[in-house]
Length: 499
Ligand code: NCW
Image (cartoon, rainbow, N blue to C red; front, side):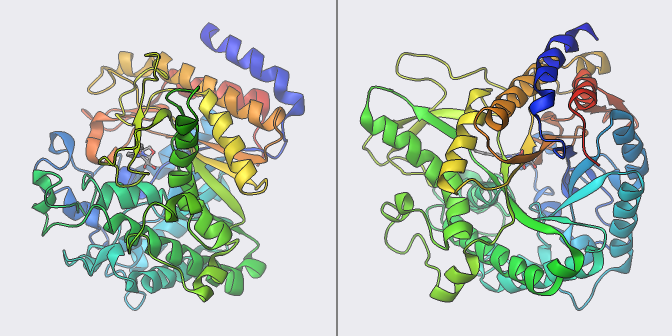
């Protein structure tokens, strides 16, 4: 326990200045933990399909069983009670409740599963924060052409129907809704690099791009996909506000991820501007549409031609202010360099090169087991300030923050439980967030540590572990709390967690 003393002592000094109703929680997502991929009437998702292709998931792992949360959630609720965690972010699997994706043929078993799950959480004093879309689209919407999945505008209305169905069936239990998880990743990794389902990318981008039913276009499709997701978000929020919100008394928002950026050369004005633009191309891309009803000027001046779609006037009006809070997933910061030369950078200004090293060779922070993350806690506070300034001091929920540490893949339980790397990372990041709250008066309302349990890390399979609880994937899926889990428990005891 000695190792937890210093972080907790420091945190305790803030306890008096800390918002009492702050929501300390953890997060999971349906596809990453549930398993039971074809049980009790569930339809197939595009990830169920994608994972069948050899080589697409590291070591050809699959999530057919995953952490078996579908059957073991009562045990995981006990675990949360033991750790004093009173807020859980989780997602609904669209094809589990609507196997064809459409509301005309719901799956009563799927609906019952989520009603039981939310009920059990509430009975345990745990508030559910529910994501409607954490990437597992019904496979029925995928016909492998550029007219399907999120590329077809029709999906906007299908999603709205699905969202309406969820508000109607679960709105008495769920008071916090998150429409989408990380539209940037869904668009860029699903349709830019092709490394996530549905695996689309430009045929000349890599040999894998043509593998799953045809190619794509990495320089246009991510923008189309994101455009439809923003509209789907807008319609779903409209539906919620018009039909349910007053009656049910809940809140709705979106979870956006973004890498913060510092200038590669902090004496160079072009790099200073590039650092701002790199964030505008991420958090701005995801949030300007739902805040202001348009894309960031930083983007529309650069992504020209027909690459960045337009919102009609009425769509723009609908989107403006379509959130009650901004959800933010923060993991990392990179250096941004203005090269002036167009390179391969489909989702950012193509003239920006991002790197973990700056001009003087300084490494921003240690590399982690996720290729996209260098640990850099101060960027958390900096990014929160960026959000506060651009969006006029909104309510913010940190819907994800956590780390996949080196050497945890196939680790023995002893190694897995001694996760000093995660203890340090989480402590430093939380301190940075607390600075933003206490010193910069940023209205952060909650923090959800990713993740409650080790789970299926998408293309990394079980090689990437983010859990504060070890899951024995080589054996019988037994859960054992890691040191980071006990550190979080100690933190919650000091800073308190609202009910
Ligand atoms: S894979 C991913 N993650 C992790 C995942 O477990 C969770 O479901 C996601 O919301 C942890 O948080 C998210 N992100 C993929 C990032 C891929 C590339 C990002 C590039 C940034 C420059």
